[in-house]
Image (tube, rainbow, N blue to C red; front, side, top):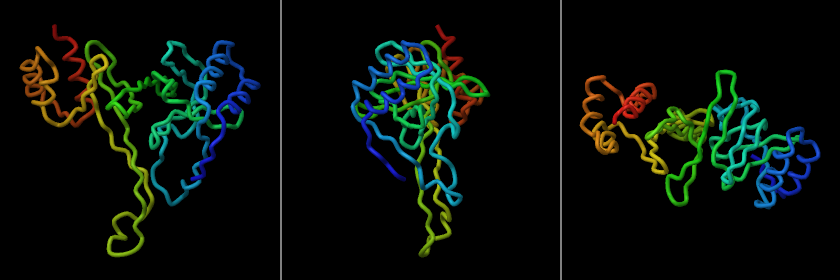
Length: 231
């Protein structure tokens, strides 16, 4: 992997010369550039025929919108989501730029299968990650993190058969959101039910009667849709 550190101000200037979007989008990009002097522009050179998987959510560039913390939005951008680095990338004028995560509230990717909306959420004071909405509702939302890890090949020694290729492995993690609060969902029905304050017993009963599997995405979506109907 080749990482090159360039001034985001220089890159933003190049973008503004070629920007075809509305004036507000150009101005917003310029503001983001001024607030973040340096970002990393990179090329993945280690993804070859011997590597399985991908670090990206979308291999090809897709059109999308970015929603900023200041309430403004950037529309019609060419975007790619790097799951391994958990960074959103902007493509313009043959440059690839990490959009400063500190400026991003969320974003939308317009895929052929439909639009997907992502939100930036704080799992801890020093850990902000991008997660996809599966159920966006009140008072509870269901979000999904696609956690990517890179596993190097083991071609030597006693364990060489364990992993013959370098591989990007994706492990989904699910979280229940209520306002700014985020709780990781485990396979325990009792732990999940305790998160639904005031409706713990109804939730436990529903999980049991409907045979809800908390490790299955489809079941989690049904469950969260149900608990949002409780008064």
